[in-house]
Length: 346
Image (cartoon, rainbow, N blue to C red; front, side, top):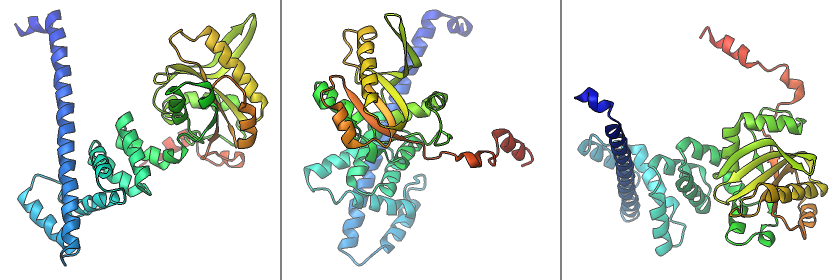
């Protein structure tokens, strides 16, 4: 009978449906467990701080508490001396915020991400606003701890929403604010091992070769449509450097890459591309196409003059290749083959 059922189409459909329900229940249970655990940690942090403030126990109370709780709850790992210190530090970290309703909102927010994420955030963030930013981004993007650490190390908090743009004048709300928040300045392409003198086409190729890291740097919502995307305008051929569709902004995004400092004429070319994309690719339900110009060290005043009275939505950001390799050192560096050969004997 089991062999017959395993090949029965209706049974297989039912089984897959049950699997999805079980997985959903497991996720909900894990989230509930995490939330309750962080409820406990928050209350413990508050209790530890209160006891230390109103007694002469000092830090010795944490040593003794760790021993007693670990002995009573042998199967729980959260009562080590180091973790109790982190629990106390976690609670204290958020105390500079206003007491009352706002602090309660903050405490509810931080309980929505895993404890390991919370530990990394309070260790690596300078203040509460920066920490809250990474908590919210973790919730919104469902970041793993590794992704969270990468974004903190790359200084995402300082780069978000800093691009020079004309979105307020060319887009309606709430798309204007969402577009502004989507752009970073600068963009960090340190996953590319290129020289500072790399050509635009070399950078384009390298970005597509590292498309997953590139999309992560661009941010959530970017769907890659193509490189050197072909457009034909009454017999004349044009090629967009990079074309994306943004699933949250509900529009196409044209990215133009320049290896030199910003020049006003770059705006005219990108403006032309946006008009063509709006005419040839944009669906009636899509919002206006957005252009992003990535270049080196744009002069803010020159950019602002260049954007004045431009009717299409444009943003200009700097990009950085931090880990660029000087040409005079490239020949001295081992290749991947050299490294693999060197490791064979290990």
